[in-house]
Structures are given as C-alpha cells and as structure tokens.
Length: 102
Image 1 (cartoon, rainbow, N blue to C red):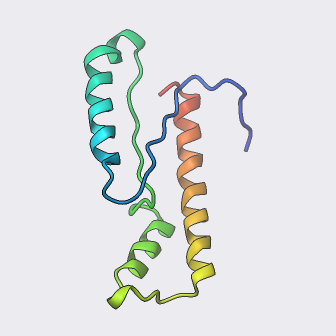
Image 2 (image 1 turned 180 degrees about the horizontal axis):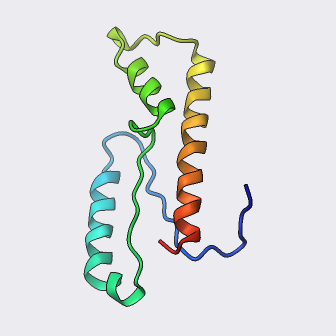
C-alpha cells in the first residue's frame, strides 16, 4: 500500500474511555461541519468506529465480548491481534477516502 505525504482529505480522531462522550462529540462536530463547511469545501464526512461490527474481525471481537461473565472465549493475545487486524482493515478504507478528498 502506498501512502501519499499530503492526502486530499482531513483525518480526525475522537478517543477516550467508554462512556466519556466520544460519540456525542463526533455528532456535534459532524453537525457543525455540515452547517458551516460541507458546501464550501465540497467534501463529505466519513465516520468509522472501532471495532467495526461490519467487518470480519470486528464481528469476531463482538462475538467474544458477548461471552458470559466477560470471560473471553479465545486467548487474550489472539483477541488483541483481532483488534489490530480490525484497525488495519478500517485504516485501509480510511486512506482510500482521504485520497479521494473525503
């Protein structure tokens, strides 16, 4: 995979612990962007969430998280590997969007 030094799009990340308001802040930023900049810049917003329930590795993660008593069904190191694979799949999609200017 080739990475450009200056992609056409803009990448922002909202991180924090569970329940701290990441989704709320993302929604607020999305509304502000659509109200103030979307027409001017001609770019749309693409949002993602990790783990992504719509890809193979994200589905495996959520299946494992649904286990009773919070006990993983798989080895803890394998579980962490799934997160890395899920992130890699999401990032490849994000880079494509950035290169398109979204």
